[in-house]
Image (tube, rainbow, N blue to C red; front, side, top):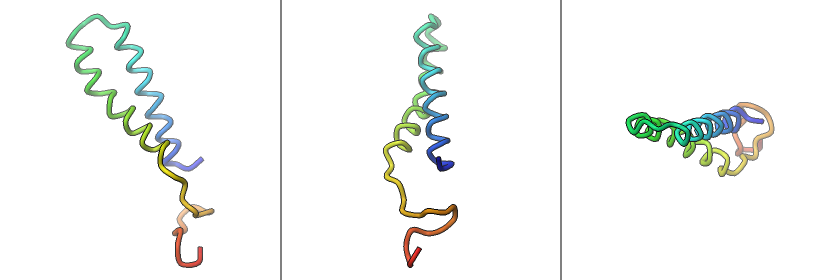
Length: 67
């Protein structure tokens, strides 16, 4: 697993755990602040997971010019 995919999965887990906490929370201010905090985690996680894989096989090699 590449470091990008790993960070995407971790941010998606953080975002989902945060939203589960927000469902259980009853304070309006915490819900508002938590939504502003955890929404970018979920967007980043889904965005990273939807990116296509590059053609490089080893770390640090560019996917063009004969690699």
